[in-house]
Image (tube, rainbow, N blue to C red; front, side, top):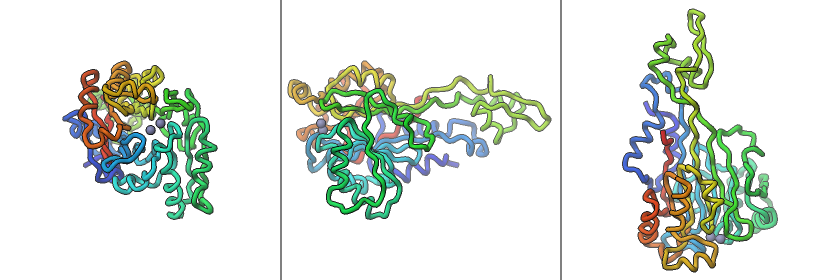
Length: 359
Ligand SMILES: [Zn+2]
Ligand SMILES: [Zn+2]
């Protein structure tokens, strides 16, 4: 029997290319989702949320034949969050099987290659007779710019669109969308001018490791009571005896951390936000030969992005937002980055990366 989260996740992501930096990812994913004993009764009570990111646009500044401008979908347990929405993003979503049933879009700054796609996307959602509200997050200026964008070319948007201006240091989920998610989105400052920000999705702590042998030894039968123990609850057995989770369930374990920088110079703010990140998605517009240009234009080189990943002790690094000159082959960027940080790939449009729990 497969875990339900596995089947659902596959359906959401569609036909885009799936990659991992680890050869054994497919195997480790299976283990991550069904890490517990084979009893199907218990597995029904314990499902680890799957998490993946799909790159919809990986080109800097302008689209090329191979790459569209910035956008990335993060899918966590059936919920889709969109980061940036460059021109043409809605078509990329169709192409790569990303759900249109999303409620939130996060913008890092308002250069045209990062937000023009929201105009058409909102219009299409209106044509689909959507009634659910949409929330758009962005730094200072979001209300003015996105407010204009969503009114453009359409008489009436038939659902509520809230534009929320965010500041570095804020936690978006604390302001809440009322769904009681098990993660927060942290806003951090980046260095690209105009109050640009990045976003970090940090999952809350998850339960400690469950020891089935100890549960059996304590006389707790496999089934719903195991699920209660896993949640830290004390359970009552048929004979009236009570068994606490202590000693059967280990210490709480950290959740996953995914960090999305948007456009930026390499900076301490990103290093701080990405400490121990499971996945750091950092812009790498240029190669070493254009490092002066990177500095002048508020961007990073691949090597600089790798230095940030190294300093943050991130597990994996994905480079995106590459200059048109690397559109066909970004091998040079990968090579330069890997000299500093081995676990690096460069994103391509349609690439999906799954992020398993590290333990
Ligand atoms: Zn850009
Ligand atoms: Zn920019």
